Image 1 (cartoon, rainbow, N blue to C red):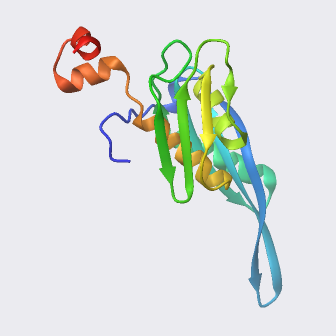
Image 2 (cartoon, one colour):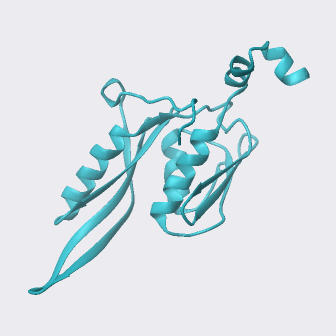
Amino acid sequence: MALSNIKRVKSSEIELKDRLVSIQRVAKVTKGGRTFSFSAIVVVGDENGIVGYGLGKAKEVTEAITKGIDDAKKNLIKVPIINGTVPHEQHGKFSGGRVLVKPAVGGTGVLAGGAMRAVLESAGIKDVLAKSLGSSNPHNVVKATVDALVKLRDAYTVAQNRGVDLNKVFNG
């Protein structure tokens, strides 16, 4: 994710809402038996173009969720949103998780499943067509979705990168 269009955001400046995507009980087997702990993946966003995800692990569920929220606040990114949807079609990939995100007309809603829905709604995207193509593991799906959102570029950014007028981007 060494792209130049990643815009890091400070969490202290904005009001963030958190969503629990997945929580799992994990076990470590030792000589004395099994030791159980919990792993939680959490997505935070201001529903206005800023989103982040985090992973928390702890012996208690509430501690794991709190750690996940704190981790998510450290990994916030800015997503370009145009008229409530994404600017263009984009593929995202992380490990076995592959996703496709496409723009949709107004009134469509968020057509996405489970983990993808949480990320897209937290980002503030109102109309989008999305499909998980690979793994259904929530960790990989969330990371692949964030990868797709990071790769998105709006027309102003494209014009700036190319050093041309905005009109030339659309009309050649």
